[in-house]
Length: 192
Image 1 (cartoon, rainbow, N blue to C red):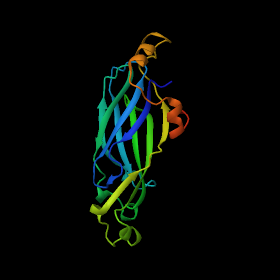
Image 2 (image 1 turned 90 degrees about the vertical axis):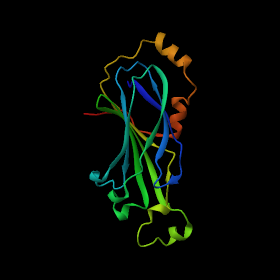
Image 3 (image 1 turned 90 degrees about the horizontal axis):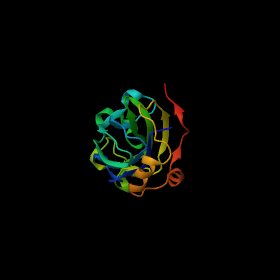
Image 4 (image 1 turned 180 degrees about the vertical axis):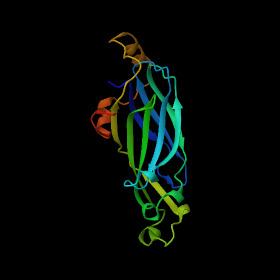
């Protein structure tokens, strides 16, 4: 059982220019108080066959985390164009948000990002040299979510008590059933 469950990831500036920062809000539920921070990372994958080209755009620590629904805004730098092979700039890339606790990844949320020129003429006949100042990105709103079993150092509360109180006082968010309708979800996977 996971102590932390992502309820929503909202991209605040989508679509945007390729060179704009990524701004988004993550909402998650925690069913037991976590004394240590959660670590979140944003990774840009331009070439799926070559992990060495992945760019960690930013990371942040959130915590300690109380029981209930929590959210935070995250801002990540745009990818460094000099680290993207020319043939991989236009078209589809991946954007991955990971969540970890005590160096154990418990969730990975992946999005497809389409990058193209900002006008039809350049889309149909791209210039010989990439003009990064004319590129726009659009992140697909349907993520792929993978959850991993990890060893949490806390136990979920017994039915009743704190879990009910935390849920009763938290803000309204989509239910897990609503979230599953809008997200592709992989089953729980063990992670070594």
